[in-house]
Length: 348
Image 1 (cartoon, one colour):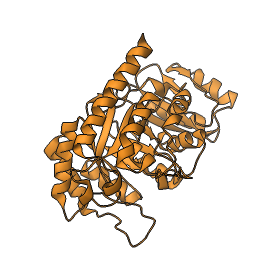
Image 2 (cartoon, one colour; image 1 turned 60 degrees about the vertical axis):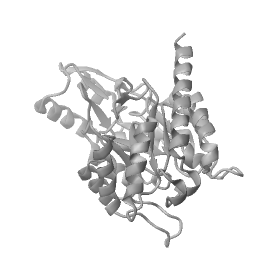
Image 3 (cartoon, one colour; image 1 turned 135 degrees about the vertical axis):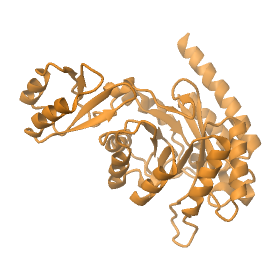
Image 4 (cartoon, one colour; image 1 turned 120 degrees about the horizontal axis):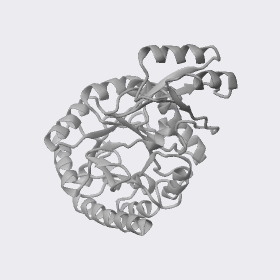
């Protein structure tokens, strides 16, 4: 990772370092920050001659070499100095909350508009809404592109930025063109490296968009989860949130095996913010508040909670796991109090 003396390299300087690393079968990937741009060396960066030549350039401040499976996501990376701000909240400075429906019903848009307003009043910072839905059964509702218009109209009405899941490259372009702030990668695509690369390419150089990467369905290793995020960062976008959401095999009585406890393990290895999804972890509305509080106790930076103005009239997962507006508001209040108490204690 190359750190220039100035905030960014000139085109001539970038061309020079690109030519040098190309001699050693490497490439340069600029990672553009709000204040400073850093330059990742993509490839085997262990060649001493290459490093010596780069360090000898008068416009290079230093070169950081991190020997780990995920060089950019590693907590020792220069990217750890960056900040991610969404919905007016800088993650890590206060509890960040995403809330909204699992699935937007294109036949009943008012349910989503009312949910969006309730989510805002409950204290959430970002509105979630499922436009395209991965389903195990090919005959169940798979989502509808028309729902993207409903999602963005709700954003305009409430002023909340939005989060939605993308499952293929076409979805990425549609979502970004519409103005979606947070692209969500679901558990079924968490190890879809082609999709992760495509998202990284689409967001490379954009500081106004981010990615919520969910943990894969199987009980994957922590390093595997972080390495999946590395695919996105390696194409130039460091605005990544890691989202534990429960894994398989399931725990009797819960939808999945709750995994909010991996939060401190992630934080030991990477700088990325951790936002836990308690709704998919436990899969039942009655259990979601306790799971949300447990996530905060483990050190989560935020929560992603499903909510519906009238859960019994929702589609997808909403009837069984979405919180009512009242339950959401209570959960957010309690979670914020716990977050504040935990951080005050840590700073004492």
